[in-house]
Length: 356
Image 1 (spheres, rainbow, N blue to C red):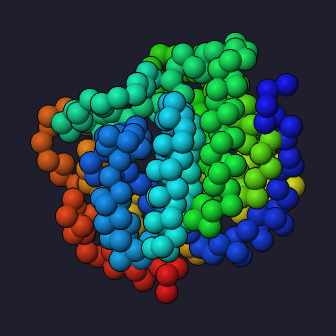
Image 2 (image 1 turned 180 degrees about the vertical axis):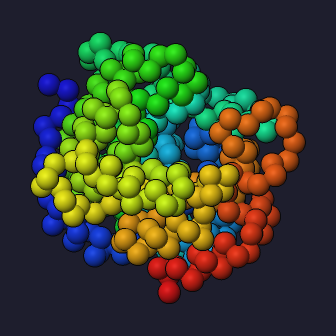
């Protein structure tokens, strides 16, 4: 048996509710420093910038936020002691400034072939032009084929991070797999991606449960259609706390929530939920209309993007390259100097803030 696969039990609905009572309402952002074009640029020793992270965490606290969702990457485990040390410094900083962290292990979005070392510069005007999948496409294929060496590598990475940080006060939830099945840049391979992603989804929950974490496990529901419905059912069945993404028109929030909940069993009615991605101005999905609705429903609200930077997420997903300044920012809350894109948005967040 691969080490770390002994497993533990999924949380009950009552445990999820007790967790929410303990941590309170989460309102925050998906976080990447303004200098980093992807996860590797954020965490590799040569480009890790704790001073910048401190500055931006401070800006977020000033805007009323109290949580961040932060992506890790499996390739960083090549220097596991160094990576864990840098992650601990960020966790300690979050605690100091009153932030909670949702840490993300795997991701099917965007570029399929990640590489360590210097990352290519951002493509002008292109949304997330250098974001990389974790693990890469070849790794996912090996896992699906039952390659024990690759399974062990990923299991060891997941286990080491959870063992080290599950007891850290800043860490509030483990988001094991972002948007499994997303075709990324390989839009013609949804079928094969689905099978590979399902194998990895099953694996990462088993590996994580093998550590016996006290913090909840989740994987965000993001797609209703086939073949993703089967993936969504497994995400729902495996998650301790329900999480989902919502970039639609605010009038559709309740319908989307019902459809997301329909993937779960009848026994899951009442399971606590966190919206781990929302806010797309070009979709009229805004702080003014979605954030208050999420708070009223008792659902955590983690929007996409804190500071405009090398990720270029102020541009829409399908924006043309070199198209100039966006007419309306798609994502992100603050300019690179910490000034608000829209002061009224920050006023809304401060008014809703769980910081008091």
